[in-house]
Structure formats: structure tokens, C-alpha cells
Image (cartoon, rainbow, N blue to C red; front, side, top):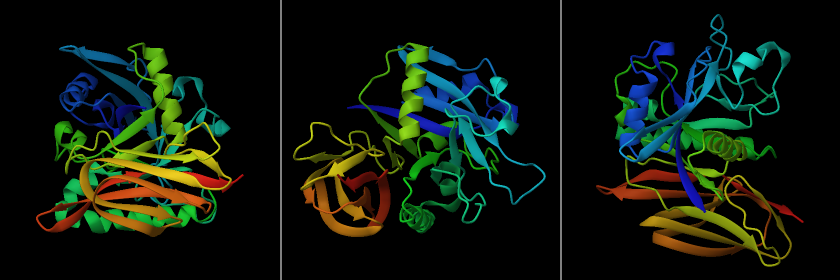
Length: 313
């Protein structure tokens, strides 16, 4: 399984930010990120999807767009990724290939909730609050996420870089180093722009990733998977697996920490100073993993996997 570091929700000069695409790409290369997705405000800057190279390293830039009604503060804001806005009339509805991510703290639409993809963690918001306030803010968003999952919908979570009220208080190196989406893919980036862009978009749409606060510790190498006794395939975050008799959940963590396995929003097991866990489950539901690090005697949330959906089969 290959791991791809991808940053979402980034602004450039087209949103009044002082960073050009080139400057942003250099910061991302410095931080070891593989792909950056820009989402400028109500504008699609065509011609900027490309690879950037430096010192034998490369960074893929994909352009999306942040869409919102500038007249109404109550209207939701969302990130639109995966389509070329020049070839899409936004009034015609949702194109099939579009990935639509509801931005953090954006007003929702009550019971009519059309978003399957949701921004749960935002780097700029976290830095504004200070590390001491992170657990409380993240817990609130995760509880809301679990409530949505309990409504029998396969919702998926993501991290973002900038907030909708960006002030450039932080440079991109600080933002990229705080949180990131760690995509898990059977395929790998090979340097071909079209191939690599489609691979990343496919994984994002499926939610094959975990979210990590890499500013606390390097999360590369975390894995969460599920495998049935009579099945050849392995399910990763975002996937669905069918339960016949039992399923083995496998968790691998790059650093000893507190690890929680969660089913339908409730902790079913917690391990201390854990790096590797096999655990057998017998019930359907949505399962996800949380990891937390102890820093100066305080416990800080570190890794959140997207759910694996276990259904009777």
C-alpha cells in the first residue's frame, strides 16, 4: 500500500493571498508533500494544474474551487474538486465526477444534508487556537461526524489547510506542517501528470485516507485495514467490507501511543503504548481508529482514520 501526502483547501494570489502557485509549491516540496489542491474563492484559475520539480523532488498541483454565495452568510461553503470549471455550468447541478467537500464550520442545510465529504480538521483554525485548545475543537467536530455516520450514510472526513477567514498570519510551511491527508493507494505516483491526478482524485472521492496532525509527530506509516476470513480483498479506510463470520481489524502505528478502535461512535477497545493491534470483530457497523500522543503529560489527538464500513453479507 502506497502513501501519498495531500494538502487540501489552499489559496493563492487569485484569492488575495500573496503566495503564487510557484511559492506555494516550493513550500510544499520543503515539507515533503506529494500533492497540493488549490481552492481559490469562486474562481477557477485554468492552466495551473501541473507538476513542479526541484532538487530531484516533485509536487503535483491540482486546481479546484471554493464555491459560496457572497451575498448570503448562511449559505454553505464547499470545496469543489475534480472537474474543470471552464467546461461546467455550475447552475446545471452536480457533475458525477465532482468531489464536494463541506468546509469546516460552514452552515449546513438541516435535514437535507447533501455532502458526503466533510472537512473535519483545519490547520489555520488549529494554529489560531493554540495547541492547548486543539483537543476540544477536534472532539467537537468528530462527535458531529459520528452523529452523521449514525444516520446510515457513508460520510468521509478530510483535513484542510486554510480557513475561510485566512489572514496570512502563518506561512505555508507552518500550515503544511500542521495537518495533512495521508492517502492510501494501491497505485503509486509515477510522474505522469494525467495518471497521477486521476489516481489522487479517485482516492479522495473514495475517502481512502487518514487525517494526521503531523505537527505533533510524523504519522507516515500508519495503517488501518480489515480482512474477512473468506475474502481475498482487504478493506482500507473509506471502503466497505462484507461480514460473514468475523473480520480481523489490523492497526499499525509508527509510534507508541494511545489507540482507540471505535464502532458506531463508541470506543470498543483502547490500548496504551500501542504500535500494532490485530482485533477480531463480529458485528457490522462503521469502524474507525483514533490515536493520541502524550506530550508533557497531556494527551493530544494525533491520527484519525476514515471509517471502514462493515455490512452483513
